Amino acid sequence: MAVTCEIDFDNNPHGTYFGGQVLTGRVTLKLDKVKLVKAITLNITGYAETRWIERDRRRRRSTFYGREDYVASKTFLVGSNLSSQVSIEAGIHTYNFVCQIPTECPSSFEGTNGRVRYMTNVTLVRPWKFNQSYTRCFTVLKVMDLNFDSPLLRVPAHSETAKTYCCWPCRSDPLTLQLTVPQTGFVPGQSVPLSVLVTNDSHIPVEQLLLSFVMLVTYHSKPPSMPNTTSERLVVNTLKGDSVQRNCKKLFTYEIRVPATPPTCFNVCGIIQIAYQVEVEAKVKGCHKNEVVSIPVTIGSVPLAQHVPIQPRGLVGQTLDVNGLAGGSVATAPPPNASSPWAVDDSIPPPNYQEALHMRSTAAPPTDDLDDPETVQPNTLDLDGSAYKPLYPVFDIPSPSAPPPADYTQNYMAERAFVNPAMDVDKDKGTWL
Image (cartoon, rainbow, N blue to C red; front, side, top):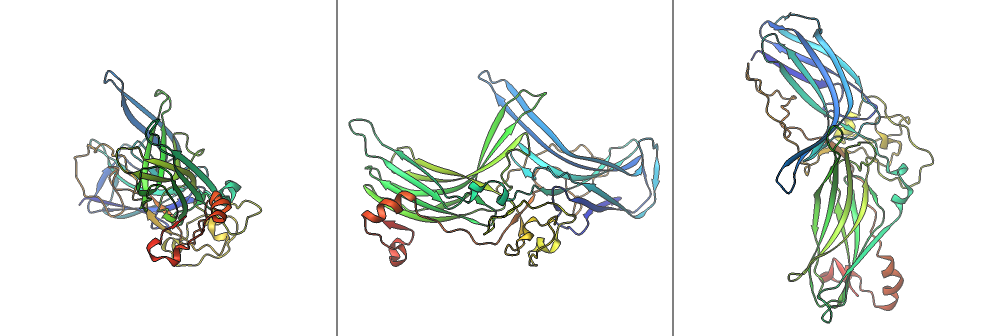
């Protein structure tokens, strides 16, 4: 093999950074013979892009796309723009690099119709031959501290919906779903507690409740493309619930876990917005349409503290704590500008970093470099859209408890006998009213 290339990040083997940190590392080239090149360049890029195709009624195709750039750094490791030919001796050659990551960078994201990606690319510009490129992606995380996003994230949220079946004069009484959560701000690793009150006054039984944690992604195009938007709905996690017979009322409590996923994003990226919601769907018997109730939730990268903070925390230091990546150290109280923004609260242990398994990468076209074909090196990859998945922090912290619906506590508890689910082994998930 003529050339091998390794791209390493200093004190950060996972390649996970926060916006505002300084990216430092080294490029190691190993040559088994003399190599002639015009130059060797190192490009550090960060961008968001969207692209999708739609067809009109006449089956004509229209392509919509958009792009935003956040990082654009180019360094000549060998040679320059004016170089004609440079000889590199056989052996091991090491080059150091440094790059400042802007603070207002959106979090890394891989989707069907777009992505937010950050990468380092080493290119051997060769005379009279195809260039050789080696790429390693890294993850950038936008610090979203739930403690300073909105005080409403600490407040319980309630939603309800009602549906009747058949038409007059055979129309049934309504099937009512009420959903309550104790707060609307969460981080990956926590579980969202759900209180579900089902009042089935109809003659149609509910065969099963289906609980879902859903990601909603909106993609936008930008000039010179025509303005347009498209949406994507990803079911991140699901949980199967119980059934409810007709003409009865029942209260359920469930918990659905938030896995590794990027934080909510509305105003950082102009062409990709990410939102989340929890849903409860009542699957009814027969050919009737199911009923769904939902509540929007906000996913952050710093969990809600038990006490309400007085002033915002500063961000960004230098390198990410590698011990924190492994989850093997206990966070202490560092200065406000620490690279671990959750570490100002010593009750929050450092998170682990995991891949978002629900993400669907966008495939890129294969390269045309057929000269000197080489296998992919351990820490570099081909940009085929499937070899790279960003890493997100996953916390091991307690989740809030689920309160019963306000309507339930004010009225039903006073009017009907309450049966403790813990005392009834046959009704471990719900309470008959």
